[in-house]
Image (cartoon, rainbow, N blue to C red; front, side):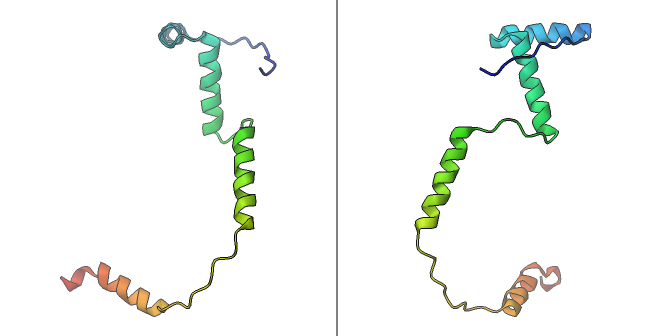
Length: 97
């Protein structure tokens, strides 16, 4: 478990009541509810939390496995950019109906 740091915060009375109800309903401590809410807010704000080492190892293995595969054979394309553009314009032309 990570080393905990003690913080003292002030809550409004309504927040305290809701916190107690949520903690009791989930079977968690009030501190755990606050920690989870803080994690959620930090993720939303764009802060990066500690990464999942197991997920990182799986990703590295996947990349190494992909690197061992032979290159995808190139195929000569049978279309032109103009053909695609023309087909798209026909599909979305609302005046054609």
